Image 1 (cartoon, one colour):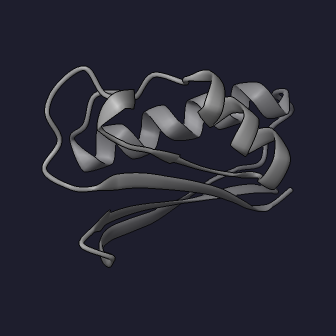
Image 2 (image 1 turned 180 degrees about the vertical axis):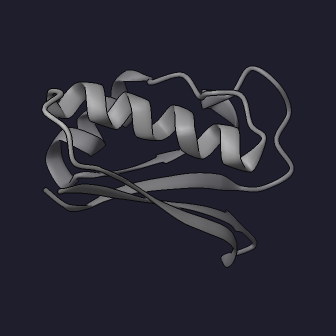
Length: 87
């Protein structure tokens, strides 16, 4: 089972969160992108852009934050945090 936790924060307070899980044979990268798309659909957000710093953080810690710089449109929160919680 592959599970990712998605959290939206504003002023250091958790506003919304969701967990997306998969039990299929896709690659880890495909699961991460699919989970991000599913979570953004649930939160009614555009899918953020992966900057080099975001990719490096995710590779190192299995966790990343998407701030205003990662989104094309304006967001009304501070950041979206993603974290792999089970592989």
